[in-house]
Amino acid sequence: MEHRDTAQETPQNAAKPRRNASATRQAILDSARQAFTRCGYDGVGVREIAQNAGVTAMLVNRYFGSKEKLFEEVVESTLAVPGILRTEIAKSGGDMARLSQVIAAEVVAPSTREHSPLDGILLLIRSASNPQAAAILRESARRHLRPLVEVLPGEAVGERAALFLSVVVGFLLMGRVIALPALADAQTPGLAAHLQALFATLLEPKEEGPEIR
Image (cartoon, rainbow, N blue to C red; front, side):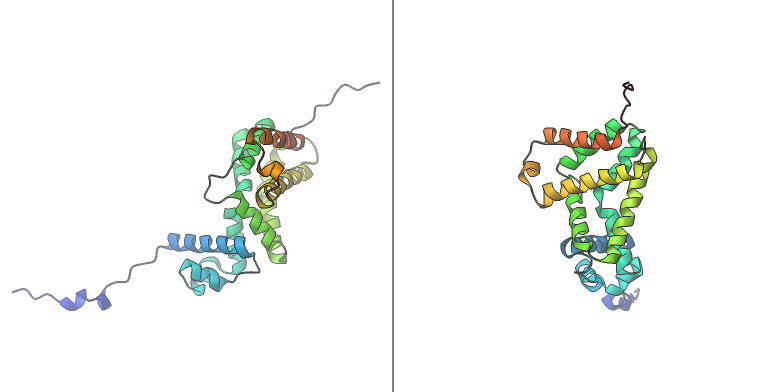
């Protein structure tokens, strides 16, 4: 009769399941996004983020290196509008009229993405008072605006690109966070048209009329 080694079947000797690195990393990012959006950079620590992600603080540091680096990654994944801008610039082929129309419609429409643009605004508002966080947010904005600066026709492209982003952020702040009725309750097509006109002023080159003597 064949003898079976039952010791090999005990829970103590069973191999522990290996951690899914990708899922763990994403769980940490999701926990950090919620924490930074809710409390800002100064209002939450690595230990709390780790606890809500179901991991240890040591594991958070192993994946991201520091709270500052973790915040950088959260900023990149949360600021949805600059990411949309980069994608649409590539599609537009330098057509600023089309870009103005698409971004206006995107900003006005309710978000269907995993992370709402509102998350990015709350992250900005609640973290900007910290110098390190402000520097990260500033660098992220510069990086995301660079493709727009490279394709903008005309002069003062840096200033116009920065003004464009300021209009987007201001709209989201007043419409989604402050919920100003004229923005929050307005009909979407008309609102998008007004926003598109503002974008066109900044993005589309003005044609010079004939000189009047």
